[in-house]
Image (tube, rainbow, N blue to C red; front, side, top):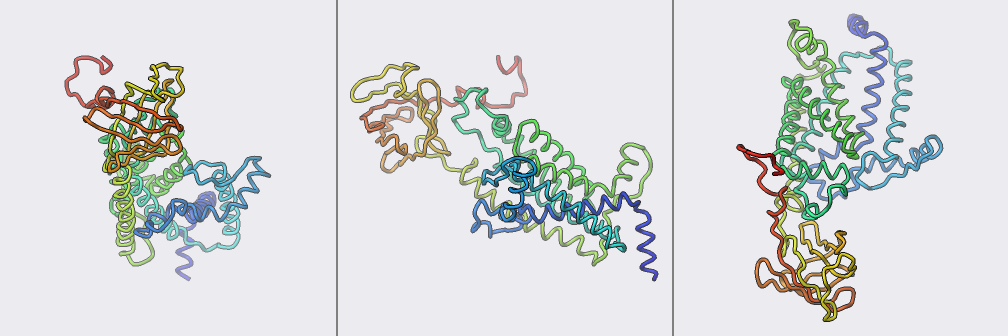
Length: 427
């Protein structure tokens, strides 16, 4: 009888609108966390080695029929799930709308049936789960920047493309990738926020730092049109969930200039060690996954990836087809202007400036350059800055002479820090 009375007194401190909002938030975030596998994928550890890239969407892909039908008949859109790595597809927007409606229905059922819910205790567990989900996701994204891998150094082709040809997302990726120290600082802030979140004593500080980091991330996603707007918004909302129990204390200290009691995490109705040990163990498990992915990315396509033979930008000085030398005319559709050999593959530039990326390889042992379906060429590299190609291009015999372009000629690749500057950088 006393326990029931205590629960009634606790619940009386929660006005009905607050209780209804709490039920909805718990229902929605629980559904979102179950459906979007990324929250669980971060704990997969070495298992990720045996999973495909699409496996991160395996739960979402199970639900394709319902959202596809609703998208077609309710919203009038094609809500087909595409394995495009975009988190803002029409399908996912429709799926989130479905989750909102389902969360509303669960809230109504909960309101009608569960009249003795211990809201403070459930609220403590809700915040606890939000801390773990938010902290481990910040580890994922933070370590990817800290290494840094998320925004790799811009490929060589970006040095030859006009600025107006880039998408907003490419502009953002290139501007962060060109300054790895800045990316490392961004990652350090996210990792620090994650570590603070996973420790009860520092969780409020971690929530504040996470709120600042994720506000910036969300604004960048909006303004640079990065297709992770929905997910970053939900991470931002989770940061607000973590800080919600401390809202009055934070307002007293930061705004109202009043004294306040210590900001402590809501107590779990379980062994106190759960609140201390579980987040740390899950954080260590998530870190192992993140570090493993970062290690692989670093060596496959990041800063630690080996550069292929002939790496660089090669300017064509002579181009002969069937014994006839082609002058460097911008209207010539056969002659090349440049050949670019990069970690990501091979690209040739036409005389009108068009860059053509094509599958290809440079075989250093056989001294051969192959552009799939286009050219099979033998190469001679008599000097570090000289390259001679001979073979067939579109079935015609060709001979090409190229010189290596000095990458330091591109101002964007020059040292980026000058403590003493007498003029503007453009001068």
